[in-house]
Length: 448
Image 1 (cartoon, rainbow, N blue to C red):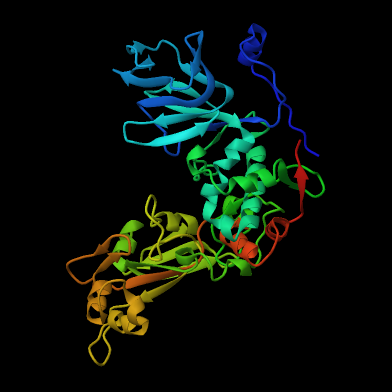
Image 2 (image 1 turned 60 degrees about the vertical axis):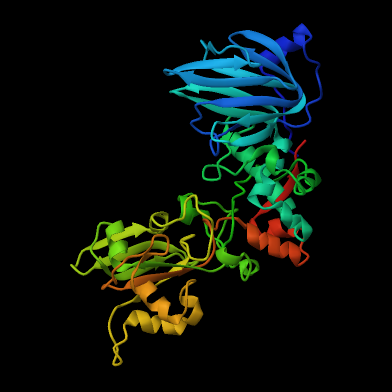
């Protein structure tokens, strides 16, 4: 049984002695989440207290900061400025501001770019190198309520509640493992830690967090928290952690995943098309003539070796190859490069006996699947003039052919496949079944 120890910081002890707050039992640990996903490098911020009771600590001064109170922070000439409750702006001489929650409440954080997020708990602001760094400090279970629905979806509660429970256990375990019992900060970024979007996204998934309160995954022998990794879609085969990060992990091993097949829409099967010249220029080569794939046992690409028409070659890691074409910041669709679980096919511009190019013949075999635009007559020129799926076409035909990359899955594929977990839940499996399938040699332990 894991036990969480509540340690009150010095400021809280001082306030307790002064009688400004009352001691309450520690139900769960507090966590600190750096807000970099939507609020990183912020120059101007407004924070409104929507409800609850807070204290504002600024320049060694502590004042009550209750509902309807407002704090604005910004900068002028690289000097930080602050404004409290619409009074005059004043130069901020310190480096840290704190809005501390005395009674559970909500803070609305706004930026001039119309970004607006509501957070539970309190917020710490640090002035660093010309911008404000924001840290959300809140109860760990409240934090998970802003993680589970964005890592999965509130909509999945209709037929996949057990998947949401499995996600809650995995996310809670990840938090404990990576925050080192509160001594290390995590971020709200899905590219660094796990996605967290505050109170805005809370909904039906909250029930899954509450139903699994305190439950984490531990090693079956040592009873220590594991690294509970997960990604969107395994493509039908999970990956070994060692093949992704170079660190062996007996809990996250490679295995067939039949539950991830046939679900997930565009992330189940996707296709990316790129012209030979553009593929070559991306990696410092001329028009590419051939592509060779070196794969892991799972089928994921370990490395890509390309050769151009001048005899030059280039070899890159599979993940680096994907990164060159990954649709960062774009909607996920079938015509995108979503992971390193793929096959490569070259379509050369050679002509057949009827005078048709290889591109045209290839499109005729695809039928209506060759392009999302127009009819058969339009599809040939579109493919023959294409730069890449993401960049579209050129005015002139490409004389060097194109490469088709057909892939499966989305993400690194290590640990739990979220779409696979959803499918398992739909088939009647419990969240314990889901966890046992995706994580090796583990037990569910209740923290207290």
